[in-house]
Image (cartoon, rainbow, N blue to C red; front, top):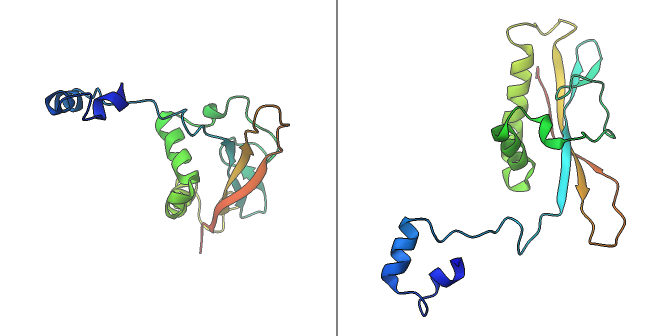
Length: 154
């Protein structure tokens, strides 16, 4: 329908204008023609003043091999999921530092001072990336991509 609404030969200009106002020119570009082939999950390793490490997403020890049973359950809501999808995109690489600053601030303030053993000292944003193979090919192992890292106390 969308292609037909944009065709000047098939649809008069007045009809195309009404279709635009009513948002009838929409189409499904989510799955075709370019099917997404990259997937993955985030690990957010944090290092504390006393040397301990923890995955700040899960509160568990850092484990790059444990794929969540439901990746979307990593996020509190749809907005967080979309935000994380966006900063994983190379086009938005400049937003990653802001996310890490937010996580440092959220963890440390006002609870901890720089010298406290539970103060977060360093943080990484890691994407465990998987590529969906074409039909008939074996799945590949996830690849660890460090998207960003920073010291919480420069």
